[in-house]
Structure formats: C-alpha cells, structure tokens
Image 1: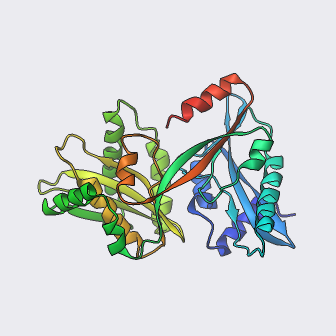
Image 2: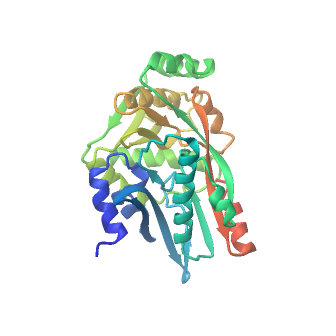
Length: 324
C-alpha cells in the first residue's frame, strides 16, 4: 500500500501550487541530518491539505525542527470555496487538529508557518506556544511604477546613487561552474563577520541545494561589481509558482557608502514581476535589517513560530533560537 510520502511525491508532480519549501527535492537536500515526512488530509479521495515536517536525530533523540535554509514549514491548502465563514474556519481547525494528533512525541518541537496560516488556536488548545514573527511582502508586483513610488525616499536615493556609480549587475541562472555561488557565499559571510558571527549556513549544504535549484531553473544569483572588478553585494533569489523569495544576501561592508544591495533588490523585484505575483523579503527580526526591507514599501505580514518543549532546558533552547 502506498504511504503518504510516496503519494505526496507523486502529487507534487501534478500540483503546481506546492510552495518551494515543501517540494520533495528541496526537503531531500535540507533534511539530510534527519528525515522528512508528510501528513496528508484527504476528503472523498482528494488531497485537500498537506503538512511537511523535519525530524532531526542527534544524541539518540529526535527533534521536530525547522530545516536549514527553509523560511517556512509546510502546510499546503487546496483552494476551496466556502459559502459561509464558519465553514472555512471549521475546515482549518479540522485539518490542524488532525495534523497535531499526528505529531510524534519529541522533547522539542519548533516550526514556523507561512503567513497564510492565520489561526493557531488548535495548537494553543494542545499546549503549544507561539512567537509572532514578521516578514514583508510586495503583492501584486506587476505595476512596477506604483511599487517604486511607494519606496521610502532614502531608498530611491540609494538606488539612484548606485545606478549613477556605474555598477554592473550580473545574473546567474544556468552557469556551469561555482564561481558565482562562491562569490555570493563570500559576501554573505562578510555580513555575519561584521556582527562577529560565523556564517550559520553550511556551505556544502547550500552548494548542494544550489545545484538542484540551478537544474530546475528555480534560482537567480545576483552579483554587482564596480569598475575595479570588485563585487560590492550579492543576492540569492528562489522561485515557486507564486512567489519570489529573498533567500540570502550579502554586502562588502568595507566599501564606504555601499548602496549596491538596494540596487540589487530593486532589480530582483523587477525580474520577479515577469514570473510571479509576490515578492517575499523573508522578513528579518534583526533591527539592522528590518528597516531596509520596510523601506521598500512592502506590507508587513505576521507569521507564527510554534513550539512545544518537554522541559525547561528545551524552553531555553527555543529562547536562544528565537533570537535569530
């Protein structure tokens, strides 16, 4: 008998609305330190919802956690039409209650769900807790004149200055070597070094994911360099059928008045408008980054990081992880 995971893998081949962070090929790469699984909710033999999860194994224990490089854990919902609001709410709670009942007993559970999940009450009723986090989105993005007009004046000024500086923007989508990725990762690491931190993204894991994304034409690496051939900034953008996601970026902070990232973001938004309807900045809760995204005139969207800890030790672990 076919299991949920096998059914889901086949389902993803025909259902085009599955988000990128829930795709089996994505999970195969980012969940190598454990295993990924899926629970399907079906009615009348039709899949109407799905939830993916990552079980990490360490020290003989299993933890349900957010996979690396993955902004949102999954719940995918089939677009259904309800004649009354209470019917829609009932459907959501029915799906969530069944999902929660499937969650294995683990010492630590933590997942963050996309902003499309607005009701976490069933988790609350089962003893889970949540922290509200924020992302910024542009939707729709096809009217680029309106999008630009909503930018903060300082953001427009930085874009103009970067343009006037004659910076060259390079796009990489199907290149045959690692030069672009290596340049991007170096600049991404510089951003962490400025804060006295080590890059938390494992380069080998990221490179493996990059190979898969490149084969599926699902990402663009942007690099911008000056007249001296020095890379000033980098941006890594991924796509699914509905959204473009700012997965990571980096800036050479040693360059005075470096406005290159602003130009790259505006370029990425314009490119994304040719493919999808939404640009997701993937938030940031860091006070030095959030104002940059906010200044692009995007809409602030709350999303939930939901967790449950077996004891105080794992509660402290969650508190530490919640810093980032």
